[in-house]
Every structure is written in structure tokens, then in C-alpha cells.
Image 1 (cartoon, one colour):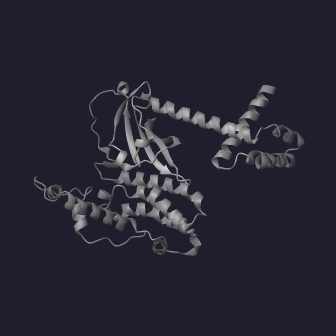
Image 2: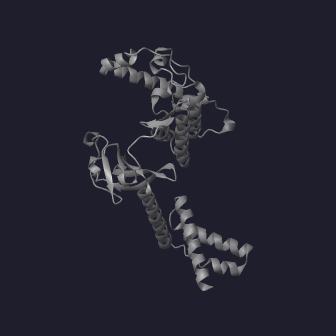
Length: 345
């Protein structure tokens, strides 16, 4: 009975430590706020006996820190186990600068878990040098041996963003490529019916990223706008070609995320009756359909100026021109047309 009671007290300590970690509060809050609140409520509702039992829960500063460290280590081990069990996985390194102007190396991993591609952060570490794009090469490919890569990527050689792909030959069933009606090319999800799945995934990713920025409600609007541009809008508009060719209804799905972002940046409430157009003017944001058109037009202009032969080949292909598929409209034809009217809904 004593062992059972002790194990429940330890389990409660872990549960409360996890909650403290999730709300990102100081570890001392367990001893100064959480535990006194529990004891006060237990004494009022359940009586002194329950209060005595709850008083045995350890929530000191050091205990909470130790619990969180152990939970973090357990999560990391679970992620490593899933990566090792995955047929393919990718390591993505990203350089960022913290508030102390120190270069931080962020390492993420994408892997397949139960048929679903998941993304988890592996670790972050301070880099002694500043990462420069000139130091970066292309995408390197490695073969995994015994769950580890044969080659390490030094932090000082990591550019603003670099992806390292891994494969496990032992788990490869065959060397052929399965025929399928859907797939992904350079991050673009497409199928025989068009890019509908890509729009759905882009919206979900952007919405998830935006929800993480809601915690900065009291931050200056200019700072929140910069976070949105870097963390949310970049996910919405990739890739500009061929997204700018999509129907207005498809683009409106992406626009709905930006409309939520404008309200978050300005802290506007629904009862303020501010229209989406007004909020866009306040935040100096361009509607998604206009932005996609501008980006696509810039890409075609760069191709024409820097690669004229490629531009002519794309504009006037050698083979006989066929009637474009309705699910895959011509990007060039769309660009030559009039610019779209800004759409805020």
C-alpha cells in the first residue's frame, strides 16, 4: 500500500511538472503557486486528510527541473527510436540568431511513423561561428549505418537552411518506383486531379504555425508582422508557380489564414467590425492572390533575363501544343493576362 501511494505521488509530480513545462512558467511556480493552490482547494473541498496526502507531492524547484529533464530525455529517445524504425528520414539544419545575437543551430528530423510523415526537433546548440550561405553546398546524401550517419555536418558549414537526406538500404524492398496517381516534387503535392491536396496541406501547416504565434499577443505589431512573414506566409505561398494559377476558391483557403493573422497582429476583435481590407492596409500586407501573381511574374522575368534559351523553350515548346488540362493551367498564360483584383475573402 505504501509503494502504491508513493508511486501515485511520483506520477502526480511528473504530471504537474509537465503542465508547468507546457505553459513555460518558472520551475519555482510549482512550490510557490501550484502546490499551495492544491492544498487550499483540497482542505476546503475534501478535508484535512486529503490535504495531508497532497502535501507529500514533491514540487520543489530542483524536483520540477529534474522531472522536466527526464521527460525531455524520454521524448528524445522515443523520437530516435521512431527515426531508426523509419524506412527513410531527413535531417534539416537551420541557423537562427537569438536575442543575445548568438548563432543557434537548429536540427529537425522528418521521418515516417505509422504511414504518416512527421517532423520533430532533435536539438538546438550554440554555434561558435556565424553560418554563411557561401559556406553551404548542395543537398548531401548519406547512407545510414547502424542507425547513425557515416558523415557529420559541422555547424560552421550549415547555411541558412540545409537538408540532409538519409536512406536505409536494408529496409528498401526493391529498387523500382511504384506508379501512383499522386506524388510530391520539390515540396509540391500534386495528383492527376491537380494541386488540391497541396492547398490543404499548406493551409494546415500555416494554420499550425500561426497558432504558435498567438502567445505573442502583447508583442509590438511590427514584430508580430515580421514573425508572420517569416513563419506563416512563407508556408502559404510556396511555390508561387503554380499556385498563382489556381481557382479563386482555392486561393481563398490560403487567404483565410492571412485574414486570421491580420487580426492577431492588430489584436482586432470581431466586434470591432474591421473589414479584412482595412486590416490588410493597417498591417501593410498584400492579398495572397496578388502576392502569388507578383512572385510568379518575377520568376518568369528572371528566367527571361538570365536564361533566354530556357525561356523560349518553355514559351514555345518543340512538340505540338496540346489543349491544357483544366487541372493544370498554364502559368505563362496566366502571367500574360491582367493582374488579379485583390481578394480579401
